[in-house]
Length: 234
Image (spheres, rainbow, N blue to C red):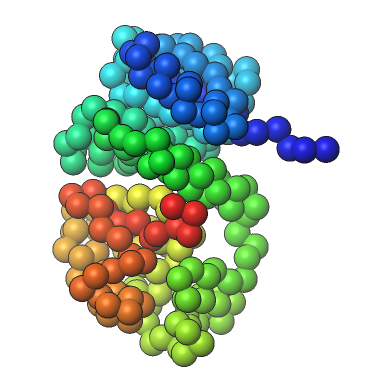
């Protein structure tokens, strides 16, 4: 029996944008639920359990960042923010609140579909648990048991911080991680203000992982926000 196509919840109060999303997503095989308000979104989340949430930040009955924070109190459903707010502060706030990704309006259908695929794939990996013994991407293999990293079969000599940073990004491949999230996970919550730590160690890590560190193809910078390890389905 074929698996049903993923069920997505669109939370958007602009009719024109809802029509665009409906036409784009249904034509590519997704099933859709729609809500115009935060209260409707919460009701549909609990009653229908969609596999991904597409969320506008400006809603009639509240801010999407507050809704994201509320949902994260009890659900790990992937949240992809779609917003006309293009400021770095808005992106960082949404991601720190628990969103998985952020697309600034206007955007193309192909970009949207790619981000959805990445978010769904990441959710599947998280649901499968952390029992994997290896992580692989772009010719790089991380042996989680022996704590060793190889590129093209050759060992890479990473510092403990570089190793933790690479594993964190690899476990969340395709997902944007903010500076605050990275600092909290790798260095600890008390280091949240030390963004230069991330920049320095990321530069050193790129020298070891990237074929051309000046033109990275794996460890991508999200300007003013953080970093993302490019997912193979993006």
